[in-house]
Amino acid sequence: MVAPPEFESGSKGPEPSMLGQLHHGAIVRYEPRLDTRQSVFHLFGCNPFALFIRDKARPPARIQMPFWSEFSHKSFQKAAGKTEVVVMVTGAMEAHGTHLPLATDSYLPTFLAEKVAEKTNALVLPTIPFGDSWDFNNFEGTISIAPEVLVDVYNSIMKGVFKQGFQYLVVLNGHGGNIPAITMAAKNATKRGNRIVIIVNWWKDLAENARKLVEETPGGHAAEDETSELMHVHPELVDMSKAESHRVVTKFSIISGSYRDELLPSAMYGDPRKATPEKGRLIMEQAEEELIELINQLQQGKLPLVRE
Picture 1 (cartoon, rainbow, N blue to C red):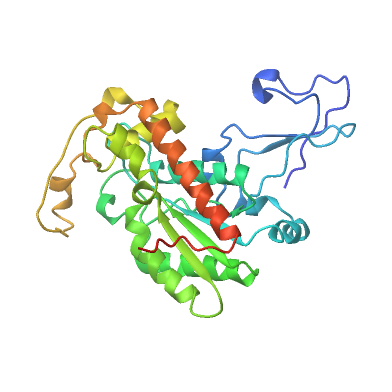
Picture 2 (spheres, rainbow, N blue to C red):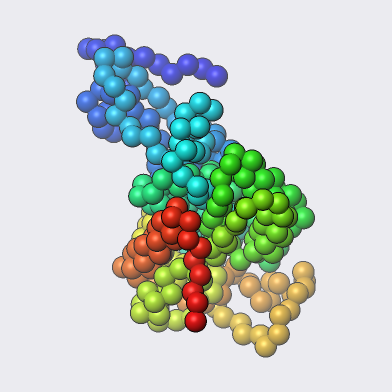
């Protein structure tokens, strides 16, 4: 690995357009795709966009965030001692109409996980940006992982987390196709010891009241809800000029490789034309609040149970 360049005091250094603000010459970690997209491409702790600038005269400006991949094995021990909760984000790489990016199901839960990292001591694992996307496998750009492979991957990660001594693992899932694999892996990983997996399918488990308040059309795939959320999180990735409405309603579940294109001709269903950034903001803010509340409950040893 090539060592990062050093710039002595008074040297020209990098161009401002490249680096943005240098925080008064202190150590800066410049990542063009900071926050959500940083973590999506941070898979297994590797970010190809990272550039390190060092000035020996000043201490680090960047505060250590509780991202699992950023600790050394020694500093990890200290971070792990502050929490019983780990967050594992599962997404997908699949077509979302012609107006949303392929990684939509990864960007949205990753955004929430990073907000949790800012406000709790929970450790956040790098996002797993691939899932079971069988329904959209015929569309360009989609990468689908076989469910039996996903079960093994999820199970290995879960066991690896519990091996470190953590009690709670929150799976923040952004894709419906992952649910069976996550569930099977969680059952296997929690067979022994006092291990607990909490599965949060964020688009239906969080911000229910906000959705009822702002949504004008039924949910779907790349529909009003998802489009609004991404307009808030990453507006530069949304092309509303290409948004179109499509909905097919079936009484029963239809599973057919040849019939998929008729059901989903544009890799979407719903009406994204009603989407707005403000709707997305209200949904994401309420989802963030509820997720932080869940993490805080777990930190206190309380399970999210509602007794009637």
